[in-house]
Figure 1 (cartoon, rainbow, N blue to C red):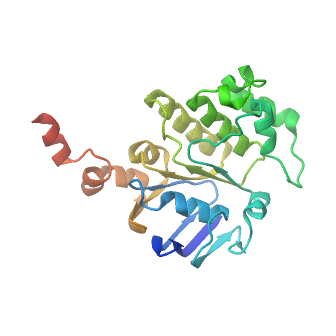
Figure 2 (cartoon, helix red, strand yellow; figure 1 turned 30 degrees about the vertical axis):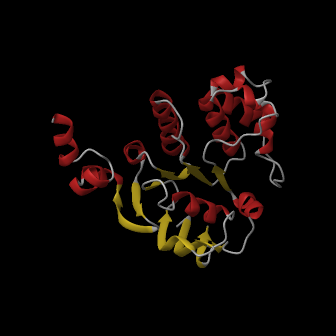
Figure 3 (cartoon, rainbow, N blue to C red; figure 1 turned 90 degrees about the vertical axis):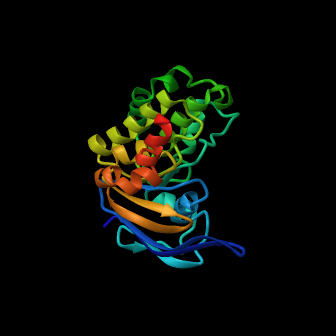
Length: 246
């Protein structure tokens, strides 16, 4: 098992965000945690990355308990995160932003291999490599954020609400790219996402989160076909269809 998160409790003062959830990822899996805005999805990723401390629970990565490790130590261990709304460095160029993805790493990264690979994966970044990131569109900044996370050859990629603010066409492109990275490069990916349909369509397994608690879990293909899940979480159930027809 690559990642094993056990009995996670996350609070912000008196506000409880996540209430005792557990989940896991095997090496090579693409797993989604889906749920409405405010369900606690981002808090979960931040706790795995070490940005938000756990009130209770443990995080085991590659058979090592990393619960007490700082975020930069987890990054060195092979965990990388694509944050919500990209959050690139606006005044740095595209190329300089990519280099921040290897800052502080001890292992050697072959930039002569990684940079061309990323430019092939995201051709627009090659065209914009000398431009400040602030001049990129929202979709281009999202591609840059993903490339920055990939440059270090992570073992586990955490992806936070990658579809937020993107046009539908770009959403499809980004999810297709994540699927390609998982299937062809065997990169293990954990996605938290409000766009449940797009996320489930590329995932092996998924967890459905509701107000800080996991209420459903299973194969993504099965969740996509579950009538209750379709109605409540995907907006494609009977009631929704009736409302549309009327």
